[in-house]
Length: 564
Ligand code: HEM
Image (tube, rainbow, N blue to C red; front, side, top):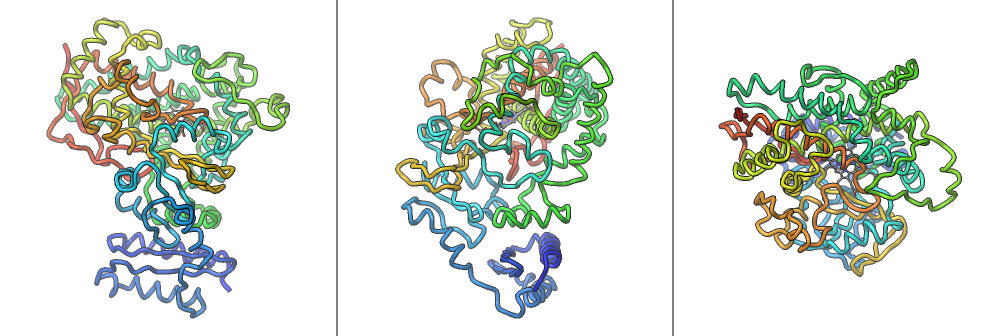
């Protein structure tokens, strides 16, 4: 019988070899049961090169050794029955591949393209399998409202596709039920409008630095890689506004802080990830070997030490910085209210949660989370805004006119950017076309009925944000950039749940306000000095990433034209 170490070794060897052969369309399926491992090879579309390669013979020997000479197994009935949940409930949907469901499509087509194709084919409510997990995909706005708000108590959590085995498991994004309510309630004041005003001077330093750094290339008329530029800007903001750290990644892009944060976000639908989606428990083995994609200990240890040092430094001084970390340290005494959201009521034992502040693990986990989610999403949004403005010069001129009339030569701040309606329309329309979070979901905690279908406990409900934002039934000419869609009159004509770049309901994005202000400051300050221009190197139309945060695959090269 194979032990865990041997099992892991075979999987890792096959994974590495498989990835080296990634140009060959060979799909490996791994099936783990108790102390036995079966490696199933589905030789779909095998190319002649694959058949003759040493790769196949190595696989065969692995199969022989680890199945003890028995032939590879068919998908066992236990798994087959998991893949019939939707057909039994009469829910339409695509056919599933054994074990992995539709997840291989994420690797070939990408997640958002898969959603677009499936919604077009199967409509507003259909069932898929992600690995073995039955997932109901809904894009009907009224049903989405029901799931996200009215029936929230039946599905308050997200499914942790790639579980965290470090401090991040104490962070908002992963927490469940009352523990999530406690952290969300405690952190709510941290994102109030008052707190955003207090961060003004930190923001100002970063956007001034941004424009200063753009100057040499702008004057030389050279193309600028905006994905990188905005990545460095949001990294500086989140490091300084979050932890009082001056990482200056705009000037020093090779620093460790930026390098590790980028590594954490370099999400690819590798076979390893598909394997974990099909068989979540194998992640325990990968974690043991420190190759679990979501649990890189070197990176986590680095960020943990960053947070620990930042806390240590402020313990030594009476002058406490006004940053997110300090707000978390003070959170249990903070009586500030968040004008966007009311406090959530606990389901059980409210006294248990009322008595305490945040533990060190909770502060560390959430600090690291803010660093991660605050960096890539907002940088992506800014990159897409610059592209939309460069490719729609009329809209850019209209925005410049508004900025000049509201601000003149003043710098942007929390209050004056609220007066710019057109700025808000441009930002909203960009997030419609290119929502950085292309989908979100909820896990069903108690059996519930959605759209007339009985959805079993533990199923996932998935909301394909990108596909909804490009749906011609909700948006006329959906691929066209048109900020006028967000005038009050036009907004009133559609269902509010057709638009969800930050999600909706109690579990929506807590950092929405922070993201909006930091993006708007950068945009306004750049447009006070320059115009975005397309150039020979600009990719039109854009190709988008296949998974994780939606970004342009090949970066975003634009030029800047001086306004003076
Ligand atoms: C343009 C930038 C951003 C976009 C488009 C975005 C989008 C989203 C989306 C779609 C969700 C899921 C909502 C749902 O399931 O209903 C989410 C959740 C979340 N976001 Fe953002 N986000 C952005 C920036 C930020 C920033 C700057 C922070 C914090 C520093 C942040 C913190 C979070 C957290 C903590 C959650 C989980 C909330 C919970 O589960 O209670 N996000 N975001």
